[in-house]
Length: 140
Image (cartoon, rainbow, N blue to C red; front, side, top):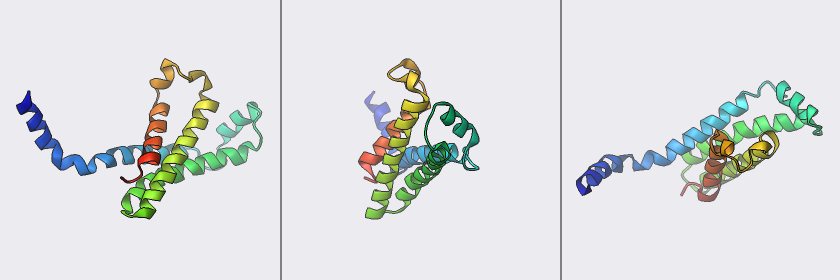
């Protein structure tokens, strides 16, 4: 068992520097694609749904969500490219934005999923957790 662990560690060791990028690129690209899928602005299907739910200013809110998703996804990636305090701040703010957007998505669009099996089998909980990870950890 020890030999197997040592072998796996020797294989993994050179890859350690890229492991945060696996999470960063996965989250960033996912959020960029989610937001870009809502273009052109305002996203009509989302506006119609918000109107049917009685929300005020649905064109503005849905446009801000789409822009926020693209911006937060790009910020997660770009923040990692800046190896300084600015990059750390961009990463933290973008991670926080992802967390806030996902709380809104879970509470508004998927409120019937709260603390259920369906929530924990969906991508929404993992997007929220990854955003929270980067908000707390930044580039460290």
